[in-house]
Image 1 (cartoon, rainbow, N blue to C red):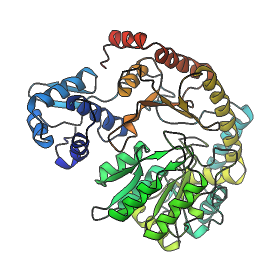
Image 2 (image 1 turned 30 degrees about the horizontal axis):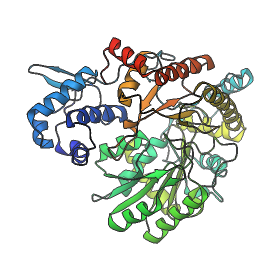
Image 3 (image 1 turned 90 degrees about the horizontal axis):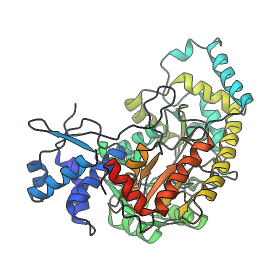
Amino acid sequence: MSSILSNNQYRHWRFALANKDRRPAYLMIADLIAADIESGVLHVRDKLPTLRELSSMLALDYTTVARAYKEARERGLIDSSPGAGSYVKGKSVSLSLRGGTDIEMTMNSPPEPSNPALLDKLNQGFTNIAGSDCITSLLRYQNFGGTYDDKQAGTTLLSKTLDEPKVECVLACPGTHSVLLGLLSSLATDGMSICVESLVYPGLKAIAAQLKVPLVAIDGDSDGPLIYQMEALCKSKDIAAIYLNPTIQNPTTHTINKARREAIADIAIRYSIPIIEDDAYGMLPETPTSAIANLAPELTYYITGLAKYFGAGLRTAYVHAPNKASANRLAGAMRALSVMSSPITNKLATMWLQDGTVEQMTSEIRRESQARQTLAKTVLQGHKYFAHADGFHLWIHLPKSVEVNPSTLAAYLRTQNVSVVSSAAFCTNNNPPHAIRMCLGGPQARWECEKGLTLITELLADPEKLTLALANKKVRK
């Protein structure tokens, strides 16, 4: 079991409390614990500071911290015992799990295909790999970044959004998360910060916390990040990179428009700041949007992978670096972190990209996502939410009449086998909106989607019913 007692670990807590909204400090601390558990900064059995240690770290009185821990215990976030201290309890896993996995379906996964011919083709792909003459070569260590064939296949995917992808600039990597880890560890040196939007992929938050890289947030709207704030930040701060999730953003589902993309590229060029373009959902739209990398190719690391338009288990992602030299430097940094991506996985990805299976799978995912979005539009009629017709998640705004904290609502819904994630998990400015993200791809069947959507609709339409349900489940506001 690990112990987390470093002052640096709680730097973002001190910042949040110094810039706090109208909520009492003890509630904010409980919310911060919940957010750090959601984003992976805190893990099950991590030891928390004692009451006196935390009160000293945060410059709060002992009673306030004691109330905060009591609130966190009542929400089921932590456990405490005399003499042993307080430990993270984590999230309660009450969802039905697939195939013996221990992954909660709050992960933003694409819907699984049901087309028999496609499933047979996938099975045949595994059989072809297992029976090939090259199987022993796939069990050896290889250079980081994949073979030439792997990189060439990657350019097939990248060419949908990049104008002229170059094989020598491409690396086949073990998932987008590993690319982000490699980029932050190599770009954000000497205390430099990463410019992000106020709502961001929780995995990036977890990586930044692990590496102790500060994230500096700017506001945004439905067209993308606010340019005047980005420019002011680039002028005044030591910014290592600008991180963007430009298409069907997680969690808001917004796509940065053309004018905003051009303005972002202009800032990056004028201030010589690299762009990390995490286009995880870029191939989902039937007509993909041209990448920001086309506007600032000499500064942009463009990333996309197969997790969102094939399946999360196919852990192959592709990064297109600004040039061959930067690709080699990134390969060296990532080799130290993960040695290499699996040659077997790369081989499958290459085969399926070359024979059109990836294109077919993406079409199936898009078709099912469109059907589920149509279902959501019907069930959630009258409620404020954002979605993309070809995407598989929703960003649902809770009405003011629902006074329950989004983290508390998410915890309750998990007890009802409905997977949502509270806004706190995505927030980088310590002011999470009154909203939740729901993944439509997690449930295997549409009726499961409809059941979850119906429950959320009923609770949002009847706040008194929600309050009573929380009281019965002993989930605190």
